[in-house]
Amino acid sequence: MARVLFINPGPSGHINPTVALCKELVARGEEIVYYASDQFQDKLKDTGVEIRSFNTDEMIDAFREYGKDNLFQVINGLLNTVDMMLPRLIEETKDEHYDYMIYDSMFGCGKLLAQKLNIPTVSSVTSFAHTKTSFDQFLNAMATTVDPEDKAESDAHFENLRKQIQSKYNVDVPNRFEVMYNPGDLHISYIMKKFQLDYKSFDNPQFFFAGPSVQEPTDSGFMDELDRTRPIIYISLGTVFNQNIPFFNKCFTALKDVDATVVVSIGNVNSLDDFEDVPSNFVIKATVPQVELLQHTSLFLTHAGMNSTNESMKMNVPMLAFPQSADQPVVSKQIEDLGLGQRLNAETMTPEHLQETIVEMLENLDYYKSNIGKIKAEQNSDKAGYELAADRIFEFRKEFCPQI
Image (tube, rainbow, N blue to C red; front, side, top):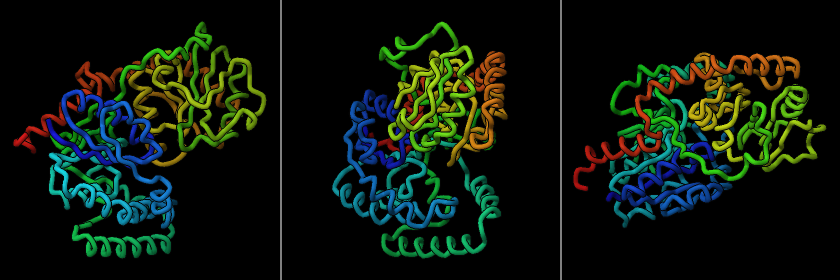
């Protein structure tokens, strides 16, 4: 048995893949202390880990202090959370023993804490993996889209934050790549290898593409409410970017005459009063058991968050993507480029174009499913992603923690 420090203050999409992994590691005998945002600790309550929480509001305030309009500001925001996280982590773990640490790849203190604790690390990657080379290329391209004055201001903030942190905590902050992606001794990704951008560049033992870390769903009774005699279309913009009332209204207009049962997850902020008349073939819910529903879904209209994309591929469901923010434009492009679905602009599409696209996709589901099958075939295993991830972590443990 090893004692594991797991740190992941990220949003829901960063937590979800680790839930099944933690259950699997605990079942195999690992003892895990898991630091998470207080907003998401309920997701971990049945995993067997010891939960310690960060205050979500404080983290968000610190993260947004330098803006969030471009990646340079985001990286400064990550550095700005160091003062509220790193001292606490150092203090609370100083008299505790850990054999290795797992941290979210976008946890800005990951590499810094690893320097202080001097233990082996696993980086938990919930989006596309990056090497320093690929990240620098991406960042340079991003720089051309940012106002030069804003870029100069962000550069100055980065250097000031970097110097302050290095001096205050006696750690090294070498570059933006390490702040943003926190490379570890091992990188566990929850996407399938062939879905990874330029996946051949990651053909080395440091990167392991376990695939979707999703447990088989239990029967909640949700499907009993639905008419399953016709195709089911599922619509969701996720948990963060779902306050897009015009988009949902366009879906109502486009799909009211389509012979399908349409399930819409609108989140906990929106309400039925926000919408125009809801057609009779629609079922509107604040939340749904997504993986359970996807088992029976013909087509998924999604924001193309990586977590939802992984779950959709696992359940062989073609996707029509409407990227909203973050990595979703890149994910949706990969969906389209690999023939797993299509993508549309939620702001500029018309209900007529949306209806035409959906009808065409429903008529060609086998084409999209065949391409999803090709991606899945590259995994060369019938095991679930969380089982493969746990297997690889135990190999890592044997190599880096031979004393256990």
